[in-house]
Each structure stands twice: as C-alpha cells, then as structure tokens.
Image (tube, rainbow, N blue to C red; front, side, top):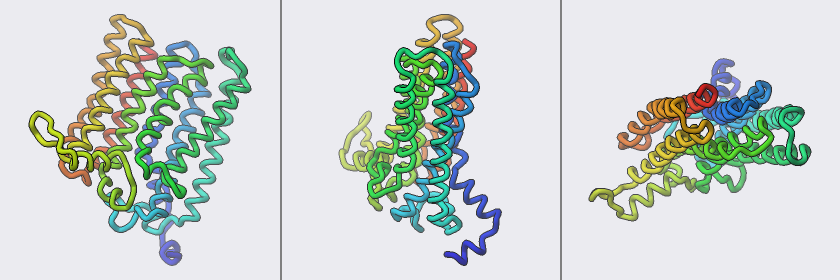
Length: 339
C-alpha cells in the first residue's frame, strides 16, 4: 500500500481528492440556501453575508458526508472489488484511512467555525427576535452540531444510520427541511410556515438522488448487510406479488415507484409554495407555470430511470437528477424574487 501511494503522481492524488469530494453533488447541497434566500428576498429581509456563509456551510456539509461515505464504506467492507460504481480514491489506495480521517476532522472544524460565524452574523443585526437571541443562537448551534454529526455518521461508526435505511430520510431532513426552514429563520428571525412547504418540496428530490445511488447498489448492498429503502422495496416487490393494472410488480419496478412519487409530490408542493408566498395573481400563475417547466429535466431523468431495466446502470441518471433539482431551486428562487 505504501509503495503504491509513493508511486502515485501529484495529479492522481489531487484527482482522487476532488473525486472524493464529489463535485457533482455539491450544487444540490446548496439548493436550500437558494430557496431560503429567495424567501427572505420576498419578505424584504435578504442579506448577502448570510447567503454567502450559508451557501459555503451547506457545501462543506456535503463534502463531510462524501468523505465520511468513502471512509465508512471502505471500513465496513462495502467498497471492495464487487462494488458496482467507479472505484474511489481510498479503494484504490491513493488516499489512506489516516489521511481521510484528518481531512474529515479538518472539514468538520472549518464547517463548525463558519457555522458559528453564520449564527453570529445573523443575530448581530436584522429583525428583532420575539424571545431571547442567546437562546436562539444556542438552538442553531445545536442544529449545526447535529448536521455535522449526521454527515459523519451516515456510514461511519459501529452503527451507521445509512446502513439501516435512514439515509434518504436524513437527507430529506437536513438538506430539505432544515436547510430551508432554519435558513429562512436566519434571515427573518421568525418561523415562516411557507418555509415548511418549501423544505418538504426540496427534500423530496434530494431524497430521490440518494435513492438512485442506493438503487444502483441495491443488491450488492443487501448482500453485505447494508439496508436501504431501495433494497427493501426490491425485496417487497419480489415477495408480495402485488399487481398494477393486471401486471405483476417485480422488485425493479417497486424500487422505481418511490422516486416517481417523490418527484411528482415535489412538483405539486413547489407550485403550492409559490401561491402561499405570493398569493393568487396572473404573475403567480405564470410563476407556477415556469416552475412546472423547470421540472422537465427532472421528469426526463425519471423517465430514463423507469425505462432502464438494469438497476446497476442507473448511475448515469444521478447527475441529471441532481442538477435538475438545482435548476428547480433556481427557478423557484427567481419566481420568489420577481413574481
């Protein structure tokens, strides 16, 4: 292993670290920051310094999750020669476990520091709080610690929650609900009920992206003891003998019903959200139509997922689904500001 690392070029090492950070997942992580900023702008409370800090912290949380995923999957024996997806830097021996531990610790420390700065900047000025600012800062500090812990313990530790089928749910909570609801609170200094609708709407496609990754690895994960919603649905479809329109539902089809439901429900909620915030007017109806159009790339990706019979080939739909979600978040933000 050491000889292999010594013979690895600087370019290969750099490429391995970039790959470990998984740049294609980072824009999705920042989508909640966009929508929270759009809602704040619609309420007349947008502040650029909060947006920048929230954006960076969101991206760093995703980097932590990606580093932890590499470290945890290798430690638990999932990233072996039977892995379906591309070989990762740790799997190839370019990045050692010790190096990844140090990178995780450093990224966690940086994220915590910037998170504390974000909280301080938010409550330093802006709308007056109904209650104690100190108490609110304490709650957000707890949120920040919980978010970092959730990113790390997805696959790290003796009982990673990602191996118990909770990865989709935690992604939904932290990159959907918490990102939008807590993010908007940092601008408004109060809870906005509309942020709950937007948080759910965003969390659904975020969970769908996680699910596509798990569908790709579903049978391989199951054979190694990693339980996900994807392989649970596969087993349910193979075992229950359910029928739809007279056709028996198999495991592959059962897995695909889940992201289908997530994306269509997200579409409905985002359109409802824009009406909740902006009320009923011609401009709002135009905004709703624009949001529907922005879902087209997501729906194209979903059609490809449904039509692809081999779940091991679903990796190519992860980027379109992730970037499609970002496109929707951008359109929703534009509609909040302009409509």
